[in-house]
Every structure is written in C-alpha cells, then in structure tokens.
Image (tube, rainbow, N blue to C red; front, side):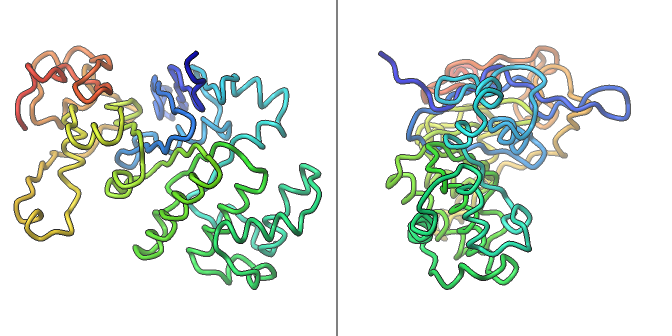
Length: 323
C-alpha cells in the first residue's frame, strides 16, 4: 500500500482582487506532494508566490480554489473541526522571528503559550527539553526577544513551533534575516531536528546553495506556477526548465577554479506582474530559447529525464536547445 503523503497540494489558487478590477494571481494552479520525512524546498524569485503558498498550506491564508491535504486529511475541514489537533500536527516558522513574537513576553512565556492553550502538563520540563533541542541555554528564559541575537530569536521561534510535537514544519525563509555564519548553524539545526524528531519540513528559500545542501525534493516556482519539480539531486544535476538553469547558473562557487569557468545565464528584464500575466508560457518574455509556441500556448507540467516535471514546451531533451 503506498505511503500517504505528508502534504498534498492540488490545483491550488490564491487570487487577490486588485484596484484595476482584476485579480493578482499570487498562486495559480500549484500542485505537488511531499513525502513523510522529506525536506522539501520551494524556491524562486521574490514575488513568485512562495510565501503565499506556504501560508495557504497551513491555513494562514484562504485559498481561492484547489485543495490541500495534510497527512491524508483535508486541511480546511480538519482546521474547522479540530483546530487544536491540526496545530499539533503542522506548525509554521516565520521569516521574521521578532515580528512573530510579542515583545512584551519573555522567552519562557513565548514557548509556554502554546502549551497553556492546549492544556499540556509538565510545562517546565517541556520548556527545558525544547531549549536543549534548539541548543539554547536556560539563561535566556527570562529575557525579552529584543535582547536576543537574530540567531537566538530564530531558535526561540523554532522551539515554540516544536512545543506541541508536530510532525510537519512549514518554514517561510527562516534564514534570510541571519548572518552567513548563523545561517549555517540554523541549517544544521533543522537537519538535526528532522532526523531526531522524524519531521517533514517544507522550507521556502531563495538561497539555492542551502536548498541544494539540505533538501531531498524541490519545487521551483515562477509567477505563481510550478516551473519544475523533482528530487533535489536529479533536478540540480540536470535541470530541464530554462528558468531553473538560469537560477542554478547564478549560484557562485567557493572553489575559485569552478567560479572562473562558471557559465552565467543573464535573464533580460524583471518577472511580469501577477496582475498582468502574459499569454502562453509565463517565462517566454525572459526565456533565451523561447520559440513561437511559447508565446501563444501555456505548457503543461510534463515528465523529464531527472524523474520530476517541467512546465516547458521544450522540456524533452530531444527538442531542448542549449542556452
């Protein structure tokens, strides 16, 4: 019997009314699955819909259309019928830890709050256990968030998310506000927590080097849609979509010999506005290999060599020209 996915997203759309009387298509027909225990990355440029997607998965943003299932259960119905049970299964880690915490509550009160809401016993022992999990000393317990470093705040945010022992974490750019050295520590922390607690983690990020290092599967988004998805190893080694290829070509290497020979792919212009999505393939206005069909027909996601899918008319290797 096939294993039930931890997360199933089917045809998800999130549209916002705009002043022109139309709609901003922040998320526009996204589908993917995340296996239990996976570390799944969602990547793409700013404005592609990554954060809206993450917030919709956990129910912080209402969907216009489509469906999300968490551990085989419809998310909307589950949250409506058993909100506390849903919170004990999936939790969200925000991009800005300071903004997501009350500045009037101490670290102890911040971590204790979900335990109080759910009426869980032995709160002091649980708080001490959570501090050990995120490698924080107990001396931070009576401090306010503003007195902590950025890395400490993110650790507190992660501890709070883990308080109810969820099986799924959805993280919205949890590394973007951190220094490079601290970022590496938090990455290692996520990996340790996934293995120690058997977590499924979805991480929204724009740092491809980090995603390549830690993720087992990846979804690449462009202008509200999935451009490409698949296992991380295959996708990074043999990307099929020109947009994915351009993203990977922009990642610098620490090895000066590799960096000296790195082939850069410069995409012209900026992504189109989600208020005015172009006809045909949404990437054709910047694509270096676009052909006539790309300007008139929207491509479907189709299987590609690395085992995933790409939304490209030229995704078949026999038709794909070199960039």
